[in-house]
Every structure is written in structure tokens, then in C-alpha cells.
Image (cartoon, rainbow, N blue to C red; front, side, top):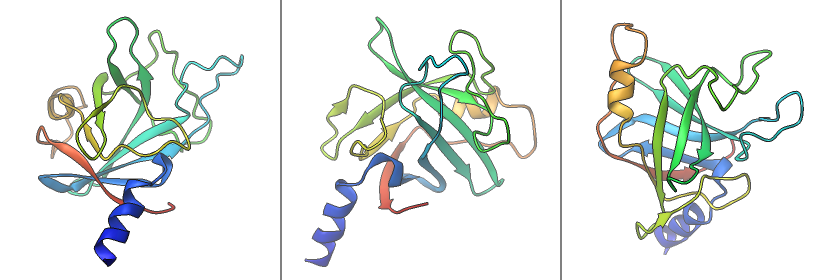
Length: 165
């Protein structure tokens, strides 16, 4: 019964409290962080108001991304960005701002693997699983060549906890 209650709590988790681990490489973790993404002129180019933080335990590196909805391609994406917790951080211009690792396709599902065809938004239920199909390639080839390089298998991030940061 306790396991069922814990599972129900995780499944009803708000996205900004969700904690994820890469299924076959659990030392790669991720979470969504509340972030002010309004640019100085008030345009809401990054409507999620969340940043996706990915931590690599092996190297101690952290990577940051901003979710953005696809246009006519009907796909969802993550735009690589600099550290959103850095002093004076500003969201990049969506039409060509700096992208240290480029853009990643973002596929989220519920617990039954039904695709959630949207980006996450503050206060919404957290996806149960997240797939970033080209993550490993982007980490290996698009990041500055710093040894040891980071890598990640093509695998799902699974919701493993629901906690305040």
C-alpha cells in the first residue's frame, strides 16, 4: 500500500518539483527550474517559464535548456542556454541567440507512454518520461571539447521523485 501511495504522489507531481534520472545511466539527472524568461521589452518568447537542468554526476557539469514549442512541424524542443542562475542571465533571442549545445527534440509522455504534445508549463503535472533522442550526440560533438567528455545513452529520463529543490 505504501508503494502505491508513493507512486500516486510522484504521478501527481507538479513539473517544477519533478526529479528525473536517465533510465540506464541514473547518474545523469534532470529537473525543471522556475525561471524568468521575459525579455526586457516584455515579450514572452519562452512561454514555459521553466528551464530544464541536466546534471552529469561523472564530470560534475550542469547543462541548461529552455523548452520551446514547435511551429508547423508540431514538435517540441529544448534550446540549450547558459546557466540561468548566473547573475544578469537573460534569455537568449529565440531567433538566433546563443545555443551552446544547439536545440534538442523533446518528447514527453505520461505513465502509459502516451505522448504529451506540448512543452511543460509551471504548475502543470510533470511528464512521467522524457526522451531527448539526440542528447548523446549533442553532448559529445557540440559541447566544447573538455575531457572527459559527457555522454548519454539514447534512453528515457524517468520521473523518480517529487521534491522541493
